[in-house]
Amino acid sequence: MEAVNGKKEVDEMKVLAKEIGIVGINKLGPVHTILPGGSEGWEFTISGPNNNVVVHRAYFDLAGMSMQEKTLFFQGATVQETLLPSLAPATAGSGCIVVDVMSNHPITNDQANAILTNGNIGVSPGATGLTFDQTVFMQHRIYNIDLDNQAGGYAIPLTNNQLGSLSPSASDRLYITRIVGVGTADGDYTIYPCRYVISADAKEEPEYEYLMRLKRSYELQQRFDRD
Image (tube, rainbow, N blue to C red; front, side, top):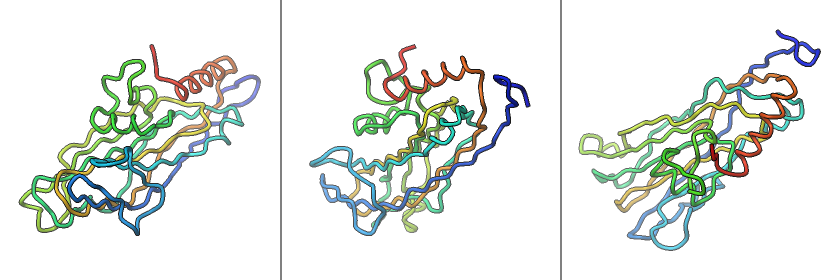
């Protein structure tokens, strides 16, 4: 422990968890429908035909930490799942993209569409998407059904890219966004439940450093990084 502002600093390890439920999407030609029986909160990012991207939003409430004037120094993050995405009927060559994001910036529908293809790479001021600093955690995966696993109906991962920064935050929220883009084959796509888990040290910083961290967190919530 070290003295900060005349007080003893006590590090607190926090482990936060938040779950997002199952979603089923039916594709029939250019028309996509969210199937009944799934969890609430899923929505399409665009309306009308070719609306093949769905998104679910939640957040970790960090107000308790911010009220204590503590900064969260993130140590690790992951997404826990039980099953791979599935497609019925399974069609070789089709699949889906699943992107899981924890960010200090809320994600709009336009940004979700951009993240699906670009992640957080190549974002310029004013562009849609997220910057590296705004992204605490991002996992971008492409799934595919091939001839070997077609009978089982489950898609196998082709890519799994980690694009997060684990940047510290003094914000009162950490936004959670799951983005799913389905493939070209007609059928019922099922994306199973997941759990977001993140661990962090909650620390008191010297007053000036904390105020600068608070200012930075506010800027990242409100706009894109222009460094």
